Length: 184
Length: 158
Image 1 (cartoon, chains in turn yellow, purple):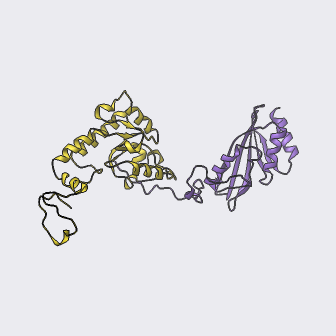
Image 2 (cartoon, helix red, strand yellow):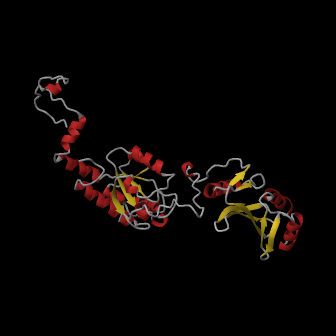
Image 3 (tube, one colour):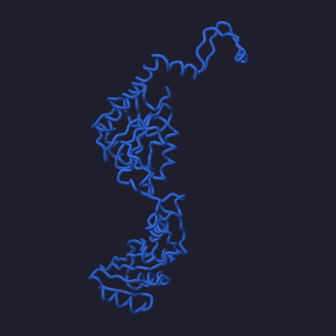
């Protein structure tokens, strides 16, 4: 845990760091860790919660509702929720349907391609508990052990308003610093 | 060409290979076929009886009889008769001749039957799983004694 130090003291452990008079030396991760303990994180979280771009990756019939949510009628842009086609530009992954054993590696790869901070929302009964595919031989059960899911939106499929409510709940979690996507 | 004409032609040409043949209605007929003669019967149906459309190939597991059945539905573009052919296989080491060389669209049907039941189609050009992941090969999930269903693992999360 490196903190920003005003004056370096020559302790035996830090002999490798070259001391320059009048210059503060630190690292980017040290600044980041320091800011998490200050009010600056509130400002950062305010920015993050108001620009949650989600990845358009429809997996089942809930994916159709997800696309409807991102279109003009429900107008998620007013919350800063914008559909993005690339995982590199996305902040939120929506698991919108059953995850088959064959699709799970691809889903993990998409998740790894998303830059941090990132969040997951499980949408629909299929991703929560299996839904109609509860006893299927080819689906993955207990998806919350694989991804850190912040919000569950039940429904089969949930209305676009319900998904929007899920995003609002995630915004509240980020505002309260209780989300799983950031390490505080 | 009506259904009785087709029926008589089929049973007359293959008296040993065809058994329990019956006419169900004007447009439906069914028969059991010897598993060694499936390809020859299909070739005859296609060449002589205008059965040029294979609708589906699927498998059925009769675990009490210790048998598999492979069911072929074969129809035509020229006459209204749909013929249902069934072949009985033993549950241990189920093997049957592939009919891809007769009906090319049997390729994916046979691959699906293979991955779900473990029925091996001999001389199939590319016998590998169609939809299931490779690591599930050998589980044969549609057999009646399959026990890999996850009905005791999922938790209700809401």
